[in-house]
Length: 293
Image 1 (cartoon, rainbow, N blue to C red):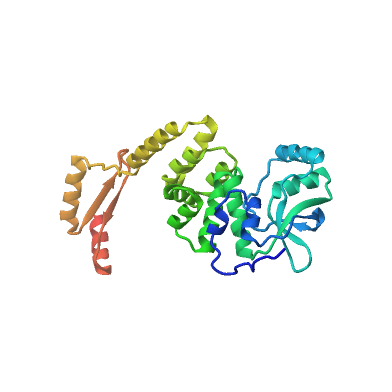
Image 2: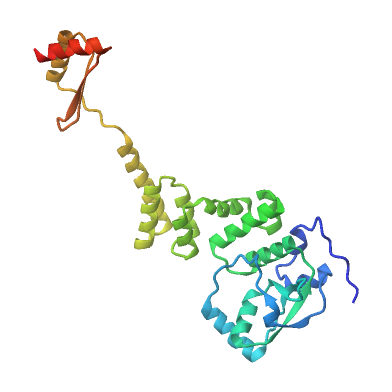
């Protein structure tokens, strides 16, 4: 079967976003060989796979299905110079096949560069897999950096609103503990958006821990953020303590006697400092003589 020469430059995301089903798109791109059967042991993992965690129970269920019916939808791979294959799409099917003990798996073999590999893996996962919020954020960021797209361009190509793209990318600025809580589903995306607006780390960690411990709703989290913000503002305001009249009179008399500037500071509990200023060594000796009297 004749195939067109795959484009090396200018192949944007548009060429793989026309259909969510990446495997079904292969014939449209005309860079795919006929479906062939490949030994599972010859397929390497996709280094650009954004998903880091896989539900073990779901994999076991898929493995049981594969034992009964085989792999229905082929995985997509590219052939490497050493003769092995590198996975582009279908990691869950590959993992489940290994669990099921399947020796060979049906696959589309594609010609793809590293950038194209990443594009296909990221887009397939964003469109088809249930990625957690942090995995989506990392995927968006990778597409922006590697493909040199603006937020608006990425929004158009993925069919997502620009605000959605921006909200996910803001998650990358969250502290590590908050990112971990989000990736583990201990807090929601909406909780994370509230936390993103709390820059003070003490307040931030307090709110995060309270959300997890008390299973706060987003509305309650917003209220807590506002309340702690008000308390923090009040705490930061310096408390001014005026000197009692007796102190002021004594300070004024001491200034006249010493012929030098004198400062008195006192807190609400009566503790304070008395500071006497001198201009040089001779002035210091003069003051010491006066104080000894």
